[in-house]
Length: 283
Image (tube, rainbow, N blue to C red; front, side, top):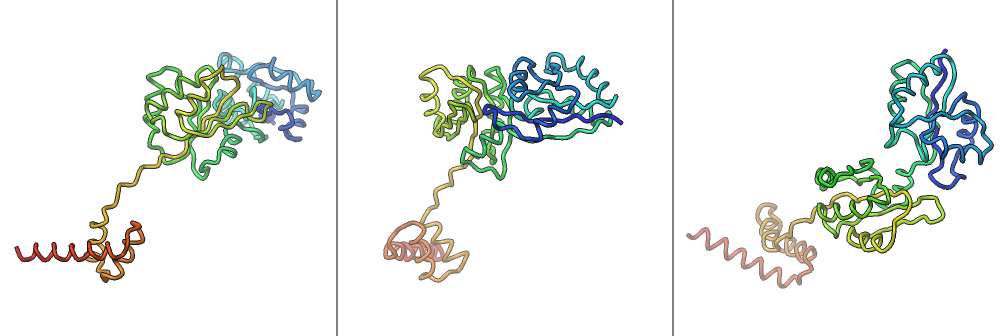
């Protein structure tokens, strides 16, 4: 029987954010495939875990994948971890997971910390529907093209960004979406210098442009809200009395409430509508 590939979430900052199950799995498996073995060794040393580590990242995934599949098929279980958070989210780990499914190797998730979900939970923006864009393109033209494609997105948009590209990304959002568009920038989540910035894109440019930006970032952009076209009082009143056949009294009452106009003024306009209609019929 083949072993199991465990997809194990690790802390995104605070080391206390790791589950008891994750620690047990990391101790029990034969091997841990890590994005950066030096980074992950610090985590394992903190918890006294001595399981062997092997690197698995985008530059060696093809040659490493075959060896990992061989060990899994031979009955050994392996844990897949990333530098921080849940593996296979905006990293190449999903390819190993897909290869395991194709080879008949069981895959088991060990859930835990995720920068994506942590940012969403604290952003205060709609979460019933959202779209994750991962990292926006590094090239300016491609980045602006991606932003144009999601400018009118009716769902909350979430993306990752690196410190050295934040200002360029904010400038691109301002150029494509407008500087008044609201957003949330989550920085260094669960760490000592955790920050949740809420404001407009323009305000974010001012805030983060004063000094060097540090730490990993998650951008949360609220759903696009189209500005409702202005409703014309006379047109609405005429529709209520004509097409909808409300009495003058009911139509005047409803329009006065909607537009915040005195009933006497709305009543006067209703009489003008009648005169205008009468003149059209006599022509």
